[in-house]
Length: 224
Image (cartoon, rainbow, N blue to C red; front, side, top):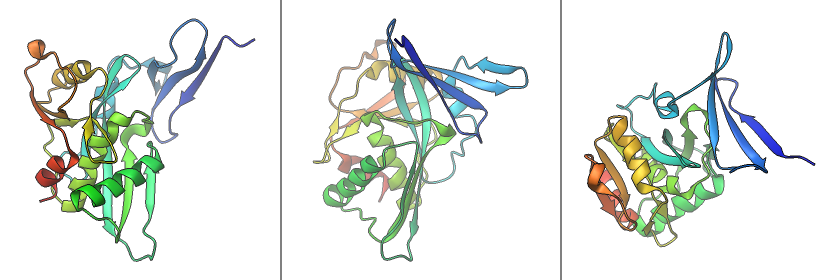
């Protein structure tokens, strides 16, 4: 009989570790704990978003901040993309921290629905800090990073993105939208690009919210 199974996740090249429960008879399995490997041992990180965003270069194209959720905890993380000309017959597709199948789907949607083709380019996608993202709401941030790298134009450093993208290119609502926006506002972000569907409690929010219903609206803004 096993009551709880816990995994420590993290990259050897990064100083922090993520404690994740994959089985728990006494509580939820969608919560995480973030710890930093210090000289005296593991130290709890009270605000993981500040840690994951601490060393980002806001002037470089191909970087978008994703307002995500880990269980009931909102967390902001940078998604980085690099689109480079390929000399190979079959361009490379490399992903770290995200689902490779989801990247393939997203590239197909960008080409079929937005007219942006990556057929002659190598594509690299990375979730900064070694975090692994599984929720579909990261689609919009990944698309923004890809379009930014493709066009060579850096995104605004005080913008965050979230939303699931369907095969039709429609941007679908995400869960806990207000919590994501509150976390972004707390860390100084001034604008969010979010799905047009879904309820948001704007009573306590001061950041601007751009609500879009199709990926083409983002592509026309970033890739032109």
